[in-house]
Image (tube, rainbow, N blue to C red; front, side, top):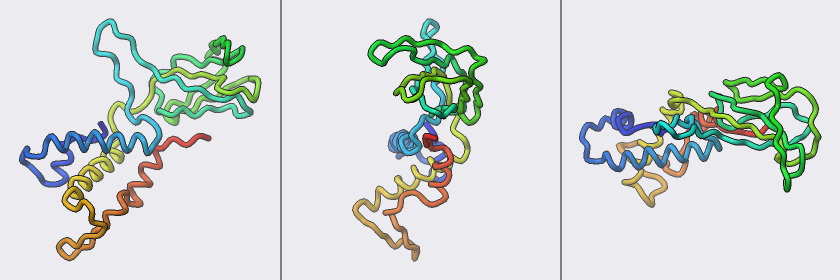
Length: 193
C-alpha cells in the first residue's frame, strides 16, 4: 500500500484504535485509486516468499512502428529479463530474443531504446519482460495517499453534502484532488509516448 494507518492517524492526530479497521480499508482503497489514476503500479512486484516460487515479471507488448523507444509502464526498472520481437504472425507467433547490444535501458525513467530496424505496422509485436516499480512509495505519493485517506475519513461525516461550513471555513467536498495533489500524481502517471 502507498500509505498506512499509522501515518494517517499521525496526520489526523488520532491515537486510539477505534477506527483502525476503517483506516486499513481506506488505505487500501486510496492506494488502488492512485494506481488506477496513474495507470501503473507504483510498487515493485515483491520477491516470492516461498523458496521454490518463481519471481513474477511484467510483460508489456508494443506495436512495431517508426519509434525506436518503448516507455515501460512500471518504472523504475529493477530487472529487465528480456526484449523480444515476433518474427511471424499474431496467430502463429515466434518470439525471438534480442541481444542486449540491440537495446539500452534507462532504468529510472523506464525507457528502452531499440537499435536496428523492425518491420513497421505490426501490432503487439515487441514484448518486454521485466520487474519494475519502487520498493516503497516515494514520499510525495505517500503524502498524497495519506492526505486523501484523511479527507475520505473526514468526509464520511458529510455524505450527501456538497458544501459544508466547519468552524467558519468552507469545505468543498466535490473537488477531491487539490491542484498540488494532481500535479504530484501526474508526475508518476503513465502516458504513452
